[in-house]
Length: 162
Image (cartoon, rainbow, N blue to C red):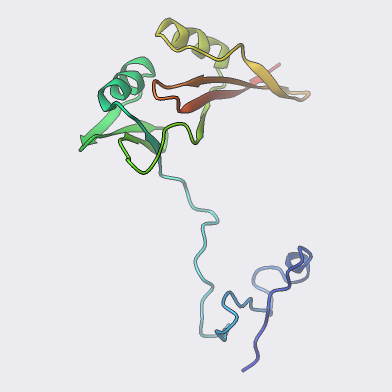
């Protein structure tokens, strides 16, 4: 049975698009037969459903995410709280193997200027004024960063039309 190998160059995708007669071999020692073996599953096209942030103080974090940021609290389990953020679930909890502060959550905020003012009134301390990260003929993409009580980074990101 013939075997095919994926060339290491980027032009491969242009020469052999998905669904072409060439079948890629994800494991060099395994023979792939395109008529009997479906394509291996990938992460392409899947939704991110949950993000986890680490906290040192679950009660303090709950007050911040629920009361200050206004996220709906879904449930609590063993030093973990779960919140709804659009279609995404946010888990904030104690994880001994992880330190807070390793990720940034970018929150969609087309009303960034209004929302920033409201969050400041609720006690959010921003690292500075909103910065423009992209300008187009249609408007500006703005970013404004802040941290939760454990030092996890969050940012409002909103496209503001002209």
